[in-house]
Length: 147
Image 1: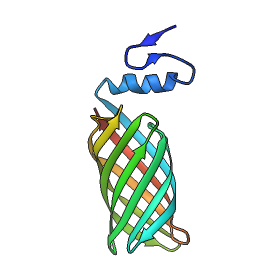
Image 2 (image 1 turned 30 degrees about the vertical axis):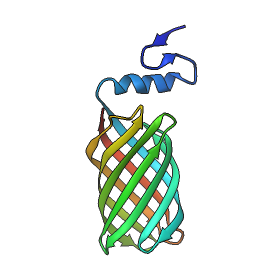
Image 3 (image 1 turned 180 degrees about the horizontal axis):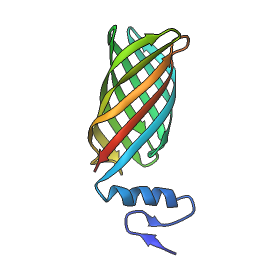
């Protein structure tokens, strides 16, 4: 059986995880995440959203999206893959377009745990849309994540 020093024994299910961990040892990966979220609650001008993130680091994603002005939002973003977590803060411009609202800005990853303990990034791209009738949110994160 082939063994990777960072990942342990390789199994069919562990192959992709081992490739990701090996990439982490190189110092950076290109993050491309997409999330489909649903509203789990709201308070004032803050939407609490949860859903599945797919892409480079799949897992569960939570976003607390706060409308700070008629044209700006801020957000706390947390992603929980099976082997750790990533957390960060975002700011973006916000536009209402009929039944949808869109936002576009940047996010900084400020903290990680587990295999992502030393993860950090500044100025990742943070974009998305909100379906205003039910607050369902589609979000994208992309850019270089450093370790």
